[in-house]
Length: 360
Ligand code: CP
Image (tube, rainbow, N blue to C red):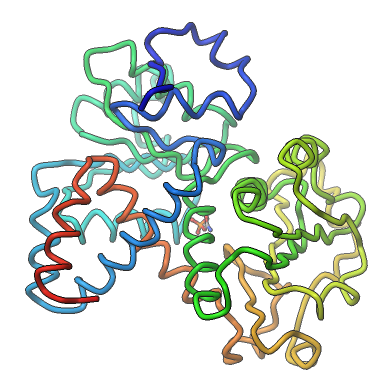
């Protein structure tokens, strides 16, 4: 790519000081890292969504599943999850299995030699010795970027996929959310022109921060940020949306937003980031939905949630056809398989198999 830059050609401090919008071009060459939502372009997202659908359809038949398993059978992925995860870990692991990658993992830093005083950087460098890709979740914001920069200055510059970092970024969740929105609105004009309401703990939800940015890549999307004042979206996100010219509204009035939204994106209270139990004093009861609310939603609206949920979506909503969160979760496997395949530059083989087998 013409404006691609190399991480090995910039100091960590200079890179770290760059605005988010300028960091993306450092992840485009080889290896192709996925670290922040701001690195994606709309054509890239659309390409990944198309690839995810092809993988999904090919995998339905045994000969297709067998073909997929050959694609990356020469590769190994390290899954390093230093924070709890069910969906992201399992969907990445399943995506690796679909494509034939062997996986190794560390899911608790207490089981690695970090407890003997090894630095996080040396720990990652150790992992890189045994793998061709690192998929990592870490509590420290920006640590995945630091890892990618550090590996770029070694002789094993393998790709790094950020599976959630601090309270700031969850780019692959945003990718699967875009895939879910695109699939859900396929028959009604796609994502362009739709209204998306983010509801709940927006101050500390990294999925919201990443997805809100990706929505700026679509035309005429309106976003509602619906939260109690203490948990409202950060000014830093609003500044990015302002710069992108996105229309948005910040409100605590969920009842007025419900009938207007094409997608409700519910989130739980992220009390793991509380300093001293402060979120227990916030009344969040009006930022939830149950079966009684369903009548006011549009017929074509969808309800999303990155999960896990607590009380913000009552289980009596689960069987409504507009409840999309279980399919959204499964979409994670297809979207992440597409991302992994594209990271290794092997999309063409899927395109050829798809065309040869007339799966259109
Ligand atoms: N959405 C999400 O990141 O879920 P997990 O924490 O279970 O991976």
